[in-house]
Length: 199
Image (cartoon, rainbow, N blue to C red; front, side):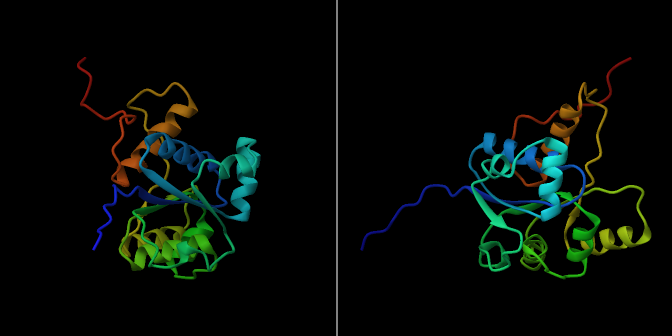
């Protein structure tokens, strides 16, 4: 009997872009994961997410889809991502609208983003939601609490200033590098805190 010897499997990461402001986070994450190597990306974008990509980044749909290894229409709830048998190492919703947060927190599974997120929770896999809204009302806070209690990670894309960023792009990159850390992927890009600078 011949036994096939398989090489190392790439990490599978689902990236979802929903309709909150901040499409740059999802796009930059796709770019960083492509540069990282050894990662297979699976992308789905909501209708409002595509509007924000065009409005905020002046990018066309084809340009964003070209950054991912696999693309799925958000209304295709029969896609591979909708099943727990689709093995993957993590999912990031970047950015995550309050509507998407609420749907995931309440288990609605009404499109491919919310269904894939529900699968991540039920299979006890890593789910990171880059929620974007301010100020927050009580419904937002309760939904974040519910998601955290279910094992998800609420990750508002808040800028850090200890690395003294010189541009918006640097702030975005720092935030994205933190997300990559949470996915457990090795990277050299992250600027890490090393302690206070001596006076």
